[in-house]
Structures are given as structure tokens and as C-alpha cells.
Image 1 (cartoon, helix red, strand yellow):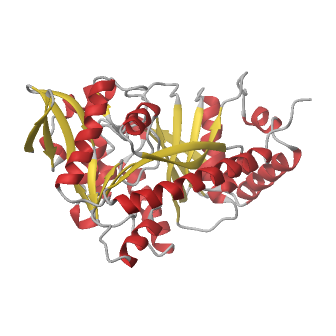
Image 2 (cartoon, helix red, strand yellow):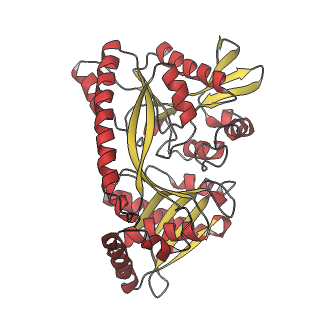
Image 3 (cartoon, one colour):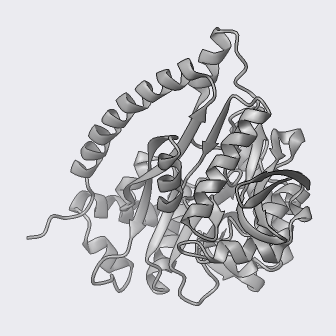
Length: 397
């Protein structure tokens, strides 16, 4: 941890190793944010530290931690997980065109600064602060750090409303993207058949056909949560996860040590679905994160999946239908399907806006990006309207 200069009533310190920062202080600050600790495990100190300790988000993979923290005396007042990035992989908010434009003008876009949970496109708090004025001071500290170290830009990804308000007040540019989430009906659907009953006839028919294909192949599913997920289950999951990444020509982002760490204090945030043949042989699995550790979590987040065998429609069953069925049975209010994917609409995951905030040091490029974002925002509004016109839900009689 490096002591920085005094900014107003705060002392700014840069943390280069998550383990240098007391986990209790970080999590206590997180608990004060909107949604608090019920925003999934992703901003918990244990989650971020596991990414670092396991070698998943480290300088060698292009993620150099330089967490910005504000202190009053020895009390943590604000913090943000800032990383220096040497590329734009694992972010899910795409700025490759910006980097190319810099390169074409002989300017260096990398390293850049990113405030994010690595490899995790789940909206939530990114600027942890005791109050709104301190959050505003944290934004200024982030910009000041980028200026003083000569970084090209600052990007805050998948922010919550409090973050966006602070960023907008500081003059950052806000960008809108789209994800697809399922939200429980009002009144709630009693089961999967009731859920299907709210869909148009063609969507309902398609889902039933897809589920029958998996059933006809002799595949059955079981689910396990928390401590019920055995070490053998985790090992099998990683085999599936890594194989699926490699089949797409990529090395897996997350190392085995990360998932080993998830079996500790954060275990009850995880739900594993395992697909088995009739003889009990496992062939695929999907891993879902839960917003909190209660018996009835508020939200579930589709995260990872993998398969060792190919079965028609197995991906849809493992990643959507099994998790949705579990959500309906356990009173979950929201299921987030992750980044991108219009195909999710056919499974009743509807479009939801997500937001990021951006600051560029170069004035001319900042002006160009601002004009681009204005055009993109107008296009996004038309895109959302188009998606909403294609809703899979039946119109009320």
C-alpha cells in the first residue's frame, strides 16, 4: 500500500495487493452501499482477493491492481477496485475502436484505468463510499491518479445509479449497453408451467421442444448449493468450464485456485447444476451466483457453463431453464443472464439498460468519443424500442 497525497479531508492511498487492505474494512464499506452485501459476491473482498491470489487478475494477465482508497485518520472512507489494463479483454464494454483510433494517430491507449470486477459483467456498486460527498471525492481521486500517472483514460464498468450520479457530476461520459434479465411476475408464477403460460404460443412451444430434446437424450439434472457442492463437483465443473473456453480458441480467464477460494466464506453464494446421463455419468454443468446467502435470494446471476459431450439444446437447459426453474421454486425475483445475447429474449429474459462511465485525458479524443456516445445513445434508444416490440410475453387480453 502506497500512501498518497492529502485530498481535502482525506488521505489517498494506492493499494497494489488486495491482501494489504483489511477485508473487514472493505466489506463494511460495501455494506453501506445501496443493496449492500445483497449484490452478489462480486465486490466482496474475498472475491476480488481470490482473483488476485489465484493468478486470474494479475499484471501477467493484464490486470494490475491499483485500488484507490480514501482514509480519514485510520478509517477507510471510500475505495474503488481500479486496475491498469494492457488490453480490453474480460471487460464486456467494448472500446477496441477507441484503442484503434489512438493507434492510428500514434498515441498509446494502453495502459488505461478500469474500475471493475474483472471478468464479471454484473451491475453493482463500484465506488464504495460512506456518503455522496465522499463518493464525489473518490471520483476526483481516480481522475487525479490517472492524470498524475499519465494514463490515457478511466472507465467505470457496470455501475449502479449512485456511481453514475457521481460520475456525471464530475463530467464523465456515460455509455449505455444492454443485457437481458428475467424478472418475476406480479403476482408471482407458481412454477415453470405458469411461467410458460405468460409467453406467446410460439415461444412456449419452442421451449417445450428444446426441453424434450434434452430429456429424450436421457439427460437429467441435479443442483447443489454452497457446502453441498463437493470438491469433486468443483473439479468436474472446472474441466467443463476450461474445455468450453478452449473449444472456442481461448484460454479460460479464471484459474482453478479462484474456484477453490469460492468454497470458503463465499460458498453459499454459489449454485451448481450438473447434467448426468441415465447411468449417472456427468457430462455438463452450469454455475450460478446468488445475490445473498438466504434461503430466498433476491437475484441469481448466470455465470459459467461447460460440457464434455454435445447434446442438442443442452446449453439452453443448463444455462436458462434449470436456473429459472430453481428461481421460481425459491422465490428469486431476478435472474441476470450476463452480457449480450438477443437469443435470451426467446427465453423470457428481457432487455435492461446497463451503464458505464468514461474519462479520456486527450481533449480532442474526449470530444470525439462524446459525439460518438451521443450517436450511439440515440441508436441504443431505437434498439431498445425494437427489442421491446419483440417481447415474448403475451399481451393482456
